[in-house]
Length: 164
Image (cartoon, rainbow, N blue to C red; front, side, top):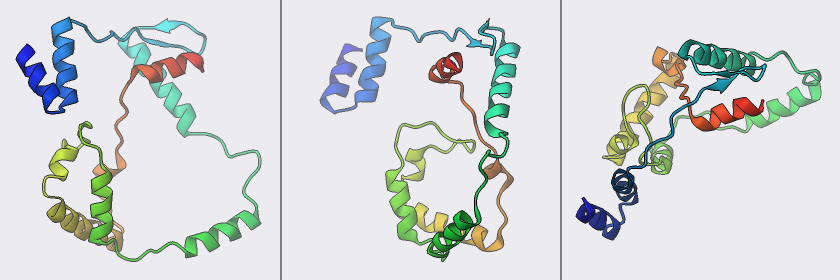
C-alpha cells in the first residue's frame, strides 16, 4: 500500500494519495452527533434530525413577502435588463464552455452520472446536450426529475443550524 501511495504522489494523484494516507493512519471520519433544535437541545434521533431539517428548510424556502416590496421603477429597470438577455438558441460552444468548468471528483446527481462521464467525449456531449436543451426550451416542457433537488446533510450545515 505504501508503494501505491508513492506512485500516486509521483503521478500527482492527490485524491488517491489522501485516501491511502487515511487508510494507513487509521483515521476515521467524525461521526455525526446530531443537530440542535430551536430551543438549543441536541437532537440525535434520526426522526428528530429529519424533522428539524424539514422545519429549517420550510422556514428558509417559504418566507413571507419582504417589508419593502419592489417598486414600479425596479420593475421597469428589470424589464430593460431582461430585454438585453439573448434568448436565442443555446450554442454547442456555450455548452462546451460550461462542461469544461465542471469540476471532476464531484458526486453524481440524481441521474447517477458523474462529471467525468459527461466530459469523456466533450464534443459529442456538448452537441447532444445543446440539441436536447434547445428542444426543451422551445417546447417549454421539462422532465419531472429536473424539478427534484437533493439535500445532503453535511457537518458544516449542522454547525450553521447550531448558530441559528
